[in-house]
Image 1: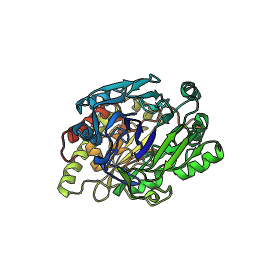
Image 2 (image 1 turned 180 degrees about the horizontal axis):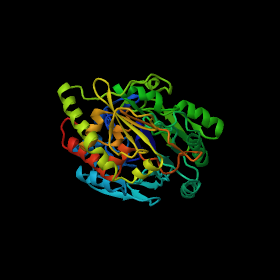
Image 3 (image 1 turned 45 degrees about the horizontal axis):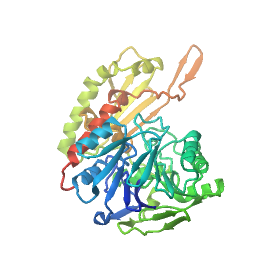
Image 4 (image 1 turned 90 degrees about the horizontal axis):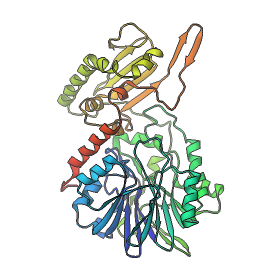
Length: 464
């Protein structure tokens, strides 16, 4: 069996006469066009072997890239005529595949084994509670060796025990190594290596105890004007993880794994062949650009609309929304009770081409009207670019874009004082409600609209 890294989480796995492609991302930009591949790659699609099995692990856009999928669906050069598409039981994901006119789609279930073209494929479950949709890792067995691709899954000792019951010691594993801090800057969450999560990656690798492991599923960076977030989002490296893994579990052989690298896996062992693929290679080794330095310079928020007339139109719409509709919508939301109970002083700051405007709401006062300008304190703040608030109002964007690109920033210091007592809000499983995320809620409706916009944009597009 041979496993080749194309980029990020996109693997080409070949065994005898069968080729499996996972989570393909062929093009820049990706993830709402905030990111590019890192390191950047040269991908010669005409040299890519015909794919017999296309596997989608889950709906995150760095794994479920609509532009790439539209290209594959519209091409006769990527998939074999009888190719099988594997997908989780995810209503939106399956709807997208149908809209793109994929055939032979098979829905995968946790630990329900499939026999396809000489490969035994077993999806491994995930205990990820952050998302409302399913995701899978994948065991690939060809009769001689077994590979596990963990992807982004969170697994338990019981899941690992079941994997061992099926195949004994795994021959090779692509394991998680990088706790991504995307959105932590924007939402004023901790900007340091999350020790519990990071140590869990080492523990999972140790409990799985493959004969050979490589780091997987992390090969992108923020692009251009969002590039400052590279110093705030990627708190470790492949090299550091493998140093730690060697100290944590010396029995596991390991190596770094970058685009174009191939792992040749046999009963005799694993050979890592650096830059051996003929269809993909590193174009620019720019990994230094994601060096973690969460004290680096940060630019101010500024609207992304450069045309002055267009910006003025958007600004007018945003001001009208804030001053005439915002409060009426807010008071219908269940979060309003929390703001009143905690006597929240809320500030909304909208950033244009030149500076910003501020509006406030005082939930401790008698008047629920929007206040233009500052009040005595802020303990709940949301700052947002005019362009992003306008697009939220127009239902033309999602928090997957707005919430991770630094054009929205928030913080909260929630407390109340009464009758000689001081009480502060402590983080629980339930997040403290934010006015903008209450008015424009993330969830299935917003996600579906986002993906269908991409389908409309890329399906049948000759420029794809």
